[in-house]
Length: 145
Image 1 (cartoon, rainbow, N blue to C red):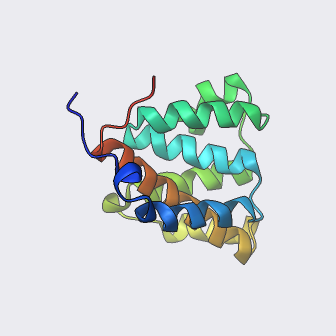
Image 2 (image 1 turned 90 degrees about the vertical axis):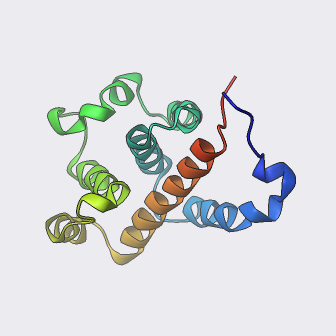
């Protein structure tokens, strides 16, 4: 794999906005398990090995189970995820794969029934943030050791 630019080493200020979004998410009404599910699922879809590795460790530390993480890519066929988590994961898939159709009215309507506005904002921002991190990691060939 070709070495590519290390954005953080060359221009750390380029990361400031994403770090601020992470701080926003840490102070949002989403719990760490919800954030972990969003980060893991988007990273799976985007094929970001670096982020999958990092967020697997974070998810386990936040109380997530190995079984749920193993079944995350088949969450629709599993009964291990709550209604709230299912909507959260559906939103993650639709927003991550925005070119297919984006966040559907049906999914958004289901989310509105389960989450207040503060949660909806946090969910959308969490999905947006991890997609940005995935794109940086993949574009710069960021690898884990």
